[in-house]
Length: 205
Image 1 (cartoon, rainbow, N blue to C red):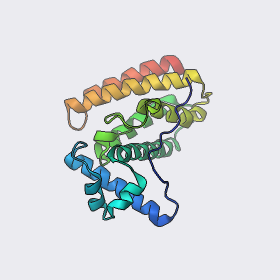
Image 2: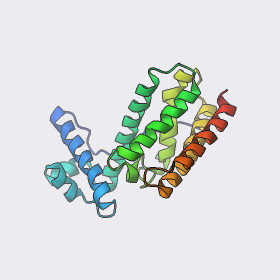
Image 3: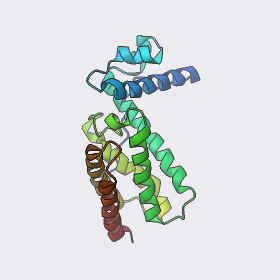
Image 4: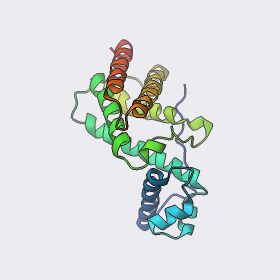
């Protein structure tokens, strides 16, 4: 199982600071509008108006709204990785239970608070990117690279498979929790946590 290469949806990467700030405003506007109108009614023109930039600035980075949603999903994954890394900085190395709690808790926190995340998250809700860049593979590969050293493990195929199974399982159950209750049904979330502990304990202990 080879790592999935990161998907890229930018027509042109920002070079200057002003250009990077404009891209940030575009993605922020995209996230806000996803919460307000949904993906079907999202438009590049509406994003440009909300971001306060010319429509040409949007098309400089993105050919269509799907590419924009994909870029937002990638940004979500970067921010999620930063949050997990920060959370683990004070934890005892090798403690896979602390790692699992950080991975699940930070995902739940973003699910509840990050604009646009409930529709896009890492691309799971709106299929984005190529087939070779399936969102859960992206997440599992990122977690493997992020946690392997912390856990004292080799980022080999076995560890990647383990994290992929855990991510697929958690994704399905967390989506269920948020279908049952707007903030995520606590009983379903706790069952998810116990299931992950049982599976990862068998593999990682």
